[in-house]
Image 1 (cartoon, helix red, strand yellow):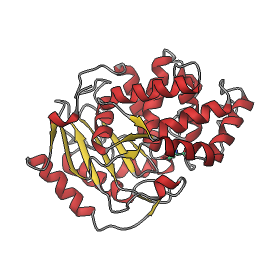
Image 2 (cartoon, protein in one colour):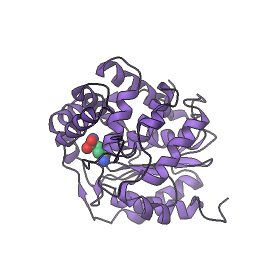
Image 3 (cartoon, protein in one colour):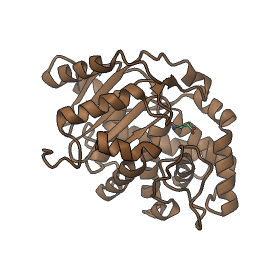
Image 4 (cartoon, protein in one colour):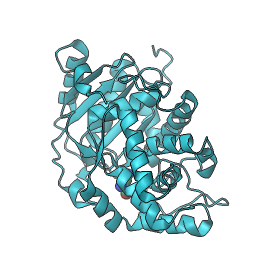
Length: 319
Ligand code: GLN
């Protein structure tokens, strides 16, 4: 795979300088707490702050700690949904709901009447979509997921085994959700297998630049703008971005759409990935989180980025 280095621009140009200025504008905000659900996440340096954009011409513009590696965590969920849609020829769309929950990401709740997960952006949904990708067993599915994510990112990616191991050991709510879905007949692989594949997906290491390219691939009809690979069809990309818009920031999705107005996914590592339809992908990394598990500085950064570049999808003057 190609290295992102050849296409990366730093603050030497105008857009890069604007990104650097946006970063400086939020640097002193110190609200929120670093996630401590697993030891590796708890060790994150709260001062880290990175931002990256990937544009349709395949350029990646970045500022701050945009090459700092972190585990992707819940920012993997849109991409798991995409891979499940591909590997089931679209049937995954009926295996999960697509309605917002108004609850936390790890709520022990399934859709009333069907026993399906409420949507693919909460843990129940991602446990299920990770179980729907091709692979035969948990190892095979995890390999397929890492390969698929690498196509979205345009570079090779690796799993942090330490993070994956702790998530399997400490993810009691994910085990509970998997068993609940088994009992409802909606999860068709073993509960431990489902947790194992999902935990490894959450433990894939990325940086803001890789995540921006991943978001851009969804925003640009499923075609990776750096490598030119058609990773998923335009129809799959549209389905995924639609659900990011309604459910990507959990029970903060309504406020997010009003203030930022760009389909996005949050994660407890402190990453945010945005897919601005037809325009660009963006990602930020800043580990301190609000009570919904969204990066505090990341959300402010993205609100300002959206305003600066005119990305709000409901802005009549967007262009
Ligand atoms: N791995 C985490 C979990 O399953 C991901 C949660 C998140 O980023 N919101 O709990």
